[in-house]
Length: 226
Image (cartoon, rainbow, N blue to C red; front, side, top):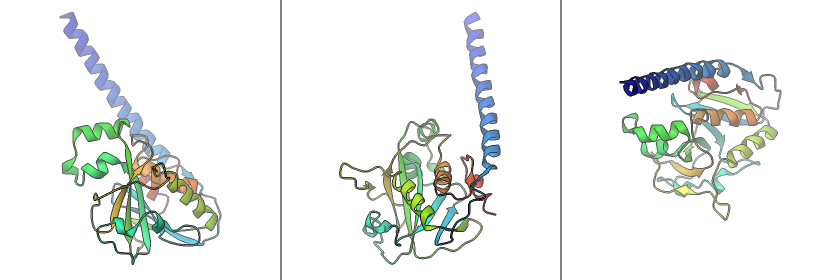
């Protein structure tokens, strides 16, 4: 009987601890996402970029080619199904590799995938999508930044890719969602504290753009671009 009582006590303490964690996590995510960083930064409006959300995940959209960076030299058109080179923009997002590759729909989500993603036990990937044009709307915000800050953005994104011994990007062949996208191996692990949106937020912070102090969700980024 004592053993049963002790087991039940530990079980309820674990449940209570989990509930407390969720409350603290949610309050922190809400509060810290409202704190704006780089709000007062002034810069030349020289290069057009975008931030885009699908309602859950944030991508950074950049011009495929300019004087600072030609993304098509490493993220190649022929690594997509369409092989279409008549594109002008590239969307880049970082995330959990298991979610990206094994969970095209929420109905495909496995418990093991969710557990690994939440605890940082799995690897990550970068998803890239080519676009011919990009339009600003509620889910896609246009940002004009200086060449200096764009170089910082490029550096941050470049450092997020996992490279082979010859310093080449490692494309995950044949795993795109549609005709104009592809996946690449990335550095780091996804967790509750480092999500796809946390990464996008850090891209903006590193390039002196408005961003949240910390946010695990897309709304924490877009609330600073109303």
